[in-house]
Amino acid sequence: MKTIAVLTSGGDAPGMNAAVRAVVRTACENGIKVYGVVRGYNGLINGDLIEMDLRSVSDIINRGGTILYSARSKEFATEEGMQKAIDTCKKFGIEGVVVIGGDGSFRGARDLSERGIPCVGLPGTIDNDIACCDHTIGYDTCLNTIMEMIDRLRDTSESHDRCSVVEVMGRRAGWLALNSGIACGATSILIPEVPFDIERDVIQRMRKTMLTDKKHFIIVVAEGCEIDVHDLAKEIEEKTGVESRATVLGHTQRGGYPTARDRVMATKMG
Image (cartoon, one colour):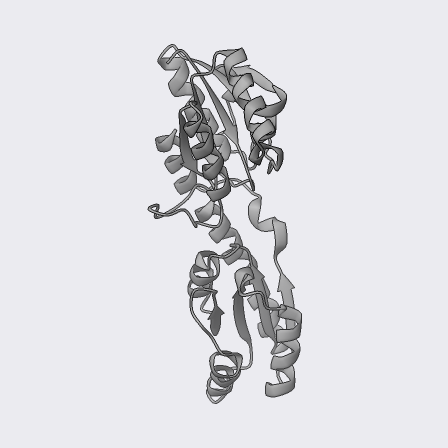
């Protein structure tokens, strides 16, 4: 191959920049021209590409987000959109595409490969939900961010004898909730992969813990459980008498400088 492209697609994840950097550096060291595709598959459709070199990726290994920007492309899923992407590849002489993203991005890479444009996928998603992959780029950073936030919630919960019900990201996967809950010593952890009962797994467990004179609690809920954490906090307060507050951590989980683990893993993958 003489020319390739690299893109980031779907939800951003800390460490994507490290992966982009590694791909560009590897390509340059092997005499391969590399284009950065702006805003994922939309960039392929619209021909929004920039030629990259070593200077364009210097000092980005420590940065969160993605310098190439990211997007979810509905148009790419159409025949017309796919053909536009293929035409762009032919126009720029692109012989292969490196796709950094999650499962949806990988499906796009598969479809593009089936149409004659070879693709390589690097797993970049905080959700850690890619098959045959122990850890995805961004997962470790996100996990540590959640842990730090829950630790802070614990401080205020302990000061007021409260229960904090915390919703974390992960889409349909419970990895972030499970491991952040373990790391923070949560009283209960609810994930979509394991059937649960609020009365048994939350209320009764809290009551049992209260017998030890503990008066503050952390309940971690994966967003894939599709539970309204505000309603859950209200139910907990009504049934246990413990003042309860719900917190949805939201998109702060995606941001921040990538951890050493994510930087090293992304660099090795690229």
